[in-house]
Length: 65
Image (cartoon, rainbow, N blue to C red; front, side, top):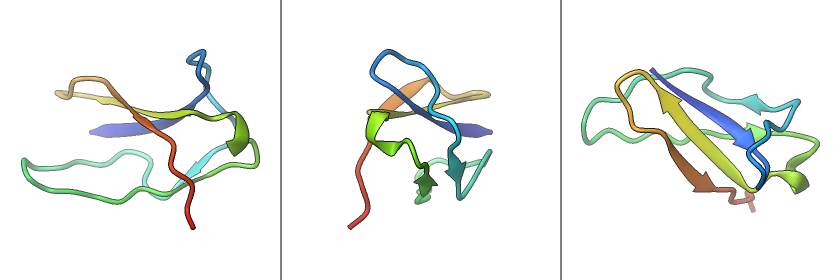
């Protein structure tokens, strides 16, 4: 189970944040596009991914066009 979380540069959660997938599973080689919406998006710099049996990681925020 993988959980995406929107965070600031200081590592604090950005709330409220609404993700298209809260917790989800992936098998090796599988991909999934997750959309996160937040009125405070300007303060967000990264999306962290953590969960069971997965190494924690961080991805930069990329705004939809």
